Image (tube, rainbow over the protein chains, first blue to last red):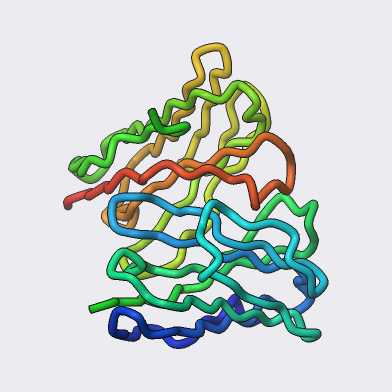
Length: 113
Length: 113
């Protein structure tokens, strides 16, 4: 069974640009979570999608947004990139919103220069 | 003060040693406690999941929760070089609350032969 897959693996963007990161959850999983892991800061919750709806968002500005498609895959969009957006962006999925385990992908490394 | 405090290490031990990893927290509402292992440039994987206070054992790993002291621990017995990774504690006030998970910053562990 394929795990959570994310793309791209690595990317470099210039300050002010926009980026889209993609995530495919494990087959059958309906909930997708996005986390940011910046150096030395640990994982910070960004967004939660379930059944196509945004259910909750963390303490991030509106330029962080996303969506979930009917096939439960998800995109994370970051507009007006800032240097401090450089981080590992992790997607995770769970079978439902009440699950006791979530499964992370390998992440997308974003460097903003 | 952060909600979850975790010593970043690095912690370096010889193969076969017993490793103790710890986190303290300030929010008494936390009920669910998790430990994740993250290898370099990989996504976190769930190691242990415990509810409320007490111990839970799984092979060489033992998780302990002391809610009265707001302190959780992960013990690794007979440590192996393959255990070298960053260990993240995480906690939530309720089951399935992955949008509310608070992660520690992670402790880097190196087990040398």
